[in-house]
Length: 498
Image 1 (cartoon, rainbow, N blue to C red):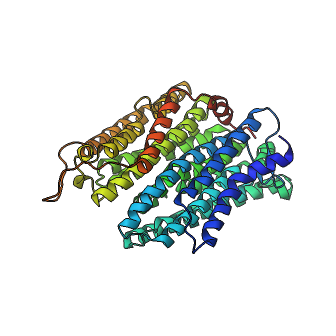
Image 2 (cartoon, rainbow, N blue to C red):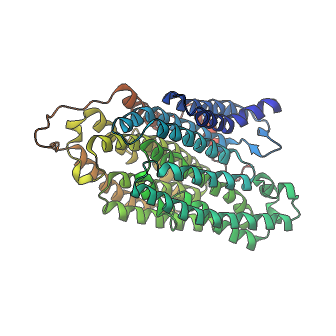
Image 3 (cartoon, rainbow, N blue to C red):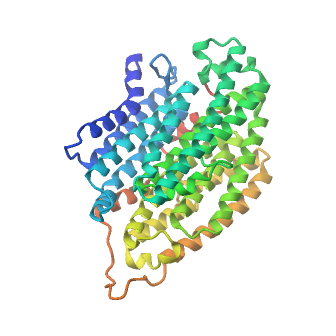
């Protein structure tokens, strides 16, 4: 790939979503098709495929804009995951918005604003994944906070506005801690005589890791894990997650849970690659393992007491992010491969689950689990899709999560992390029981209808049902065989590769 070509394809995932956002914002008086929301995800997927071939060719990593953007196996893997999840969420959005408009909860201006914000959100996530500079990465992740705050408060109800403010305050506090950690890394790099222009480039930090001050790096790593961990839904700054995910529009909840959490955790992986070379793997292993176990224990406890199905899915996201963090803590190639595969499987399954939950909310008018009964009888297609997505999240075969959790357990025992694996297994089984019981209560039994309402099954149209079917099929295929993604996954799992 020539330098000019690499610059073009690296710019596509960032420039196309931002350009699409500008087009939607400019044409205020002209109705643009809701399906134009698929333009950006398709562009991201196309760029991911082209960059994957370049990364696996054995040549130098593609760079652009004087090294500000850089594609390696990890960023390309995440690019493909984000593109796939965004395509599913974008395909589900028109049917969701059509029902919102019919119910009087949205209008043409609201729909345009939604499209602008979603495109900007996607562009910011792509910028974060492709950033070679930790400062640019921080700015991009902070941009996702600003954009998604407006999406969380999309309905402008008291609950949604409160959730948006809670999201902004907590995540801004976390991002401020991450910023301080990045400043300390910059200080350590400058003290090690790293050129000023490269002092925040993570490949340069990896190359000069032997000269970085261990004490400064230790403190910086703790702040980065705590700060970016807030955006990833890890304790202790996790309290925004259930409120934001339960109040945001269903396709936005799918994007936030399916990929935003993982994109934020990618920033932790970048800093971990530096810290492991400076401090050895023991420090980040202990830090991430403790964070993962505390997050998992809290998520399971909250799942046991949960009575709201959208919040139930949000706490499930915390559970799965803790498993990803545990894979990063183990740190072996097998564990990292399992964590990255888990990111993809969770993104696909959670997108289907949240999009289906949005249709359930529109059908029943409530998010209370106790008020939703007989969903399979009332809406067979919707109930089946929701049930299968939860089964995928429970890591039952052939879900991709089954393969990733099995590989994660093997990696933990091989790395003498058996005690942690045993604790995790016990907690995961408890979460399994909580999710299974509550989902079964929603799906089975007689449907509760108002007196005089005819028991006519509600059918999903093709526009609403097709994204759910495709997402479930993709998750199942990922669990059976990664196919051409195997080489990319193996390359992305190599720890510390610059």
